[in-house]
Length: 238
Image (cartoon, rainbow, N blue to C red; front, side, top):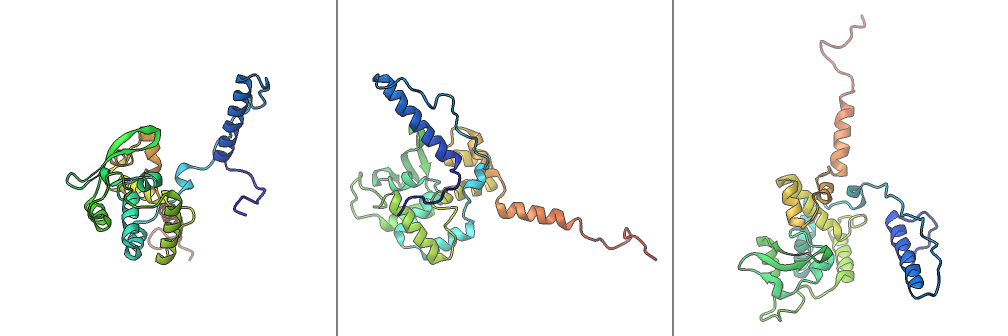
């Protein structure tokens, strides 16, 4: 069975989705006069205690390089679309050849969350990867990658296995997280917000957080300062 079999607590996001569905159902029943019940009226979704940056871990830049080293041409293009252009899975797999503007180095009219439409800058490495899989005379409405989000997840999992890179806890969105994290680190949070097309800068702040490994290194450095010190400040036990 592909369904969930555990009886543990549901994630806050899952509860919120199910609660919204229940409220919508009873709202529709009241609208058509089939019921006057409102069992979810006083219920609110639980707060999510997990920090946004802890929900999905980014791939390290050296891990992305390992993925690219063993990827076939179509997967090279997919990795670059997500980890270089910062596209979401559905945006990358839904891209058509008519949107690829190699002359100006842009992916034209990418539709993101909330229906917002933006042109996305395409790095030279991405354009090279797209050129490697471009048919001689592609139909402008033909999908660039030729597979959808579900197959993209399967392909990336297989690619991670070949490269010896952990997939769990990162998945496809981890590549976009890598793009945001690396740009925030190198060029600042405003540049990351622009690349990721965030309407709210607060959304981008999660990419400016230190990685788990970096936070561990900070903690280790602090603990190292509590170790025994030798020198003139050391107590004299004689």
